[in-house]
Image (tube, rainbow, N blue to C red; front, side):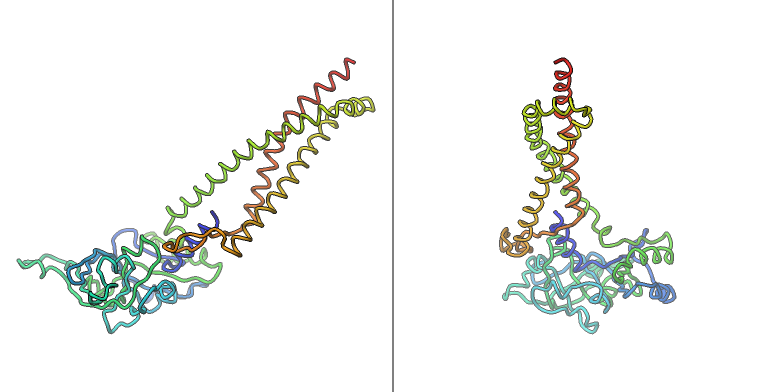
Length: 362
């Protein structure tokens, strides 16, 4: 589950910034130069990118797709890794002199632009702002002609929904000169929390400042919930397995009845005798836990090194990802020892008392 969470985060990191600022009310806002200068002066803030997003219609020949057009400035490539997820073509959105688009693979399939029988030229349509008196519906639309320079592949959520253009093209298409819909920020390592607090202080309550995990909180919470559910299921399996420990300790106590009587005769009290068998039970569990963790680590290492469990070629992730976290090893070990302690408690307390009662009466 750690590997899946890490891999999903890595995939989303390609197009998600460290921090993203949006307005609490309204879609777009204006960022003045003085506020931007104050933001740039924050310690740990490396780069700011201004973006503008809205819905638009893309049309190529007879095919069309309703998508989210995201206009990005020249700093966007520094903050994200758009080039790393391009499957064909080139990143033309940095050219502010031409109407280049980088579209998701799903959008490309919808428009047929990956097929040689179709032109890679597309038309972009967006409703004009304000009231219109024209009877011709086309007069109510802003129309721009552009060319698809490249296609990216990341996940279905983005591949079928997002197309990138340069910021000026988006402002022209959406009639939003000087406006932005988000401020995307790259931070120094370990400084994201500090920068997030400082940005929120400067911009005030009218803006939301979210980190990468907060931007996709539903996704990552779902992954954490799955991890917790997996942990609980395996804990129940461990509980069932501890019946072996209960049986082993019970048989050991029965086998050592004469030794228990001897110890009792030599002056050992009930707590001392119970402590001996409790330590025996914890010793058995400790050895089992250590061996189990070592075998588990070996299996994980083999998967990391040799990719034994693979997915199909149609998946973005070619093999099952593994990520070992020391905290999880500690949790597993403590869980095993906790269950072992509770499992050993019953046979040790009940059967040793029974033996001691028999010793007294005899």
